[in-house]
Image 1: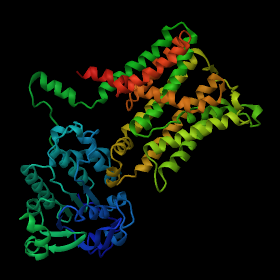
Image 2: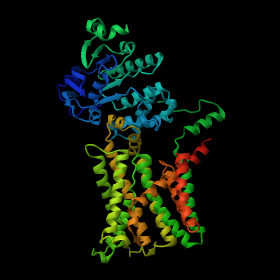
Image 3: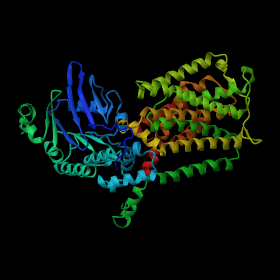
Image 4: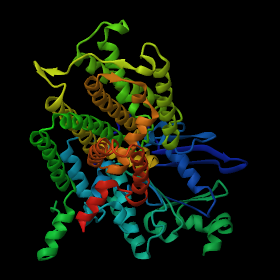
Length: 254
Length: 340
């Protein structure tokens, strides 16, 4: 269900354009002059060691932090200074690293929250049927009325993905979706992401991940961050062959 | 789309599972109806008109408690000044219906309606400043602001000549509907019950709708709600205005009945008592505060005559015990017993 963007400029070259974005905390440049573009349908992995600036960059992308310099353009609109809800309304969906589902609400209620902003004007019955379909996609049919607090960690992560998907995002940001997951769960999550990509080939996806195996399963493009800078951007093979990347990051993990 | 089928188990366990899977609302509906039936029957079987009249006042306080539970129990908005809306509405009705204040005297019902509007407006000003600004207030910050508002309001009422100073204002209107007096006894009780039921239903409707789900989600994780595209400040504003209007409606009727409103009505002490009812009854249950308000006020009226000083001490102790031992309040405690 592709959501129409009413005011989409005709020459939207990229879903997301990031230009020279910088963010400083105290004396530390957590993100230092980062630029990149992400086109419709691309699945991009963002990797880097702890403290490389991935999380800060992610926060800049969805409006939690405001960049000290540079711009973030989403769907042709400058969102650099806009709050997170504006990003959401322009089609950005988020999946957080730690369980940020609403623990006191049931699985169904969580999904309804995800479904509402974009389909709020639709009939409640339509929303409910969208939720019912999503329950199957994320494999939580039996847990429909269960409080999210009583789900296993992996299930909560899937619920989180389901919430984000129900809004019909054009750009999905996943922050370490496999953290705390078993290998088998990670593999199933990768299958889920791939399946979703087949269903919505125009949706762009950015995955922040430590787990290279996971990135390899889902993405064709990898960006590497090191000390706040983007030091490589290309196919997995290209990035792995890059001496700078080997020095700073991959070398130590291989 | 296959239906959700909980009958995968066999025999009794499947049935038990089906009951557990039921949305909690049907069991809740049964408790609500039982309490309503009790509240309808009590005045019919009681021959004591004074008792029934007094019970009517408790029902209006219960509506105030429900309005506080709406924002605090569900929205996490703690207010130390909620009586300002209740007592403030009393002052507004007093000013509008009394000739000596130099204002054109209005009928009681139009005055009550205007008092509700005034309470909603006051709530809109407080919530607008607190939740819609550049740096919205949350949690303790907001609670302190409400404490300050209640304190200032009380001090102003004590010193203002328009508001009658320490003595307050005498209200002269009589409550009647189509020639029937609802000012005293069973008539008043019926009116109070209507106010409580309408208030309760308004809160329940707000919570059942999308707004309620968003409100509870905001309490849990505001940032996440914003990243889903919602405006958390707007939901807080809406619920606060609704709560203020309900408190105002209950207060307006209450003070017309009592025929006097004085500074204590809007003060911090009165607001703290409302918090006590909500804590005792169970935050986030709507029903619990109703039960707690009626029970506690009835006990206070019955026992404080006999044990004047010790009773207040007992209430304080009760609060501490409730906070320590019954985090879910009375209703939470009873509900847990039922689940087992």
